Length: 527
Figure 1 (spheres, rainbow, N blue to C red):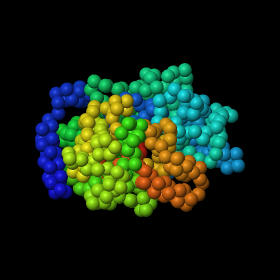
Figure 2: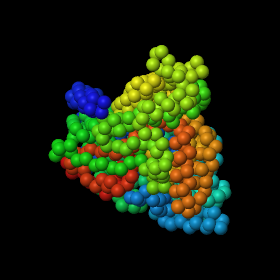
Figure 3: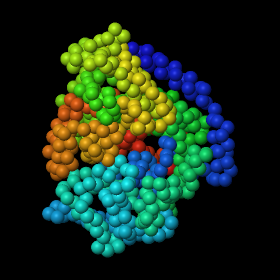
Figure 4: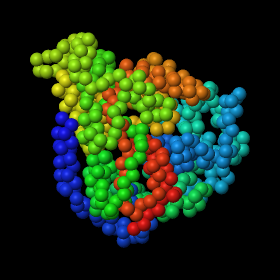
């Protein structure tokens, strides 16, 4: 089976690359126009992801917000929060107050001075604006008050100790002078942002599929070496590889099979990052099917040859997934690895759950066939391949997982789940908003009282050793009653032209290998 999958996908990849080796006339025309008007010798063209907003409160896991905006804190190479817009901070454990002393040499990209009012405005939106369509507001629910005794001091008082709050103070700060009174969900600022970060926004050419940035020469830290970044909004994985081949991009995150195509070619360089990025089938627990059959999610793991999926779809570059915090320093409890690939065990467990094999080769229970639908974005080839292999393996075992290809995820269309990707690359509390009942990022409506208790305890415990024990307990509890059929963790494969230099693989990257530009100020490009 493994050899067949590897051969099939290799052949498909070769066909895809050959068929798409020439850029479209529309893309070539856009690039030709860019070349006429700009000197690209010190410009990085990055094949990124599709975007709809660059407001960090609404889009907090992509590259662009981190380039354009700054937070009170930022992550260092080891993923630890350190001061950024804050020169320093104090924590008073007796009063649970964080006092941030702000830099006084910071300008917004429009030339206005940055001060405490901007910080207060941003965090009031995160903690008080009930209309804000953000998946991260649960990260700030322990903040009780926000005060600014002077223009360069901000004081946060918490209701209780919050272990990951410094991580969440890395959130990009918004300009109060531009956004006071605006609807943050829909304002024009979201497509023409002004920040205090290393690069300033210049233009969003939606027709040409590119977002242009220029380095911020007034940046309070080290000004980047690379003058401009052209961020190409590309979702299709074949197109990214083609753009690298044709010279239309200088750097791209590629799935492992595409990255393999560039090995041994001296015109390109490859960087393999560690990531916390995993793939799995996330079940919508509010759907009629899972409302009745949630007890049968975990058992599906026995029917999946996850290593075969890794060997084929990921070219062997990945790790079998059993926990959403498996690669986090405070996770990785091996006792949560409950489900080896074992079709005989699968059949036994299904029988114990009351499922009976029907004449059509599918399991039935209470008059219901084991059939559910999973939406997968059609342009994400790696996810489509994973979904199809999972579906094939489950079908052979007697379960019908129908894969529905969509252009974008629709949470109201009635699907039973989606082919998901998530990451917990920093503090394990990152999963709080996703798995706690009714939390802001819990799009799949997962709810488990014991999970809620453990994640609350982990958030509000100070000792790292005690937290590791708590999160280990969470892993075991969640494994017994999961909401995601976990498949694999991915390596982060980046490919660029040989003249790109400075990428630092120390940092563990996130979902879609986001975070590669964490040290962009050190990069150079030589054409």
